[in-house]
Image (cartoon, rainbow, N blue to C red; front, side, top):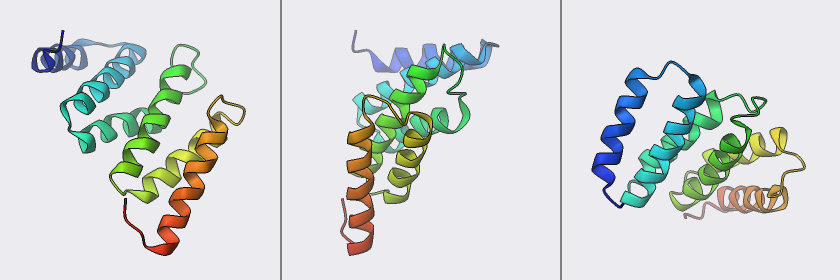
Amino acid sequence: TGNYSNAVLALRDVFKMAQDQTLRTKADFALGNILKKQGDKPAALASFLRIALLADPDNPDLRAVVEKSLLESIDLAMELGRLQDVLDSCDQYLKVFPKGDQANYVSKKKEEARLKGVSGAGP
């Protein structure tokens, strides 16, 4: 509905009360999307990275969420000039999803970040 403040409040309740890690991970992904829409890219990136680092990609209920979180992390980190986060997220994506639909895109982003880091270029 576009009422991001209420959505964030509702998600806080989920984080407080949910015992199920799958539900918490999906709520964290929703929070990342809301923060991104609000323009808080660093906080959104933190939500997506949290999923990428902590969620089990071998869990079939979370595999797609982990993949989407890694892709979001790559794009947001690139926008923010956080090249090490781009490289780390790319490496993790290619390790976990070597035949993923976005593997070519991720490889290109990894090379782009590597070249920017070598040249010292910003975002």
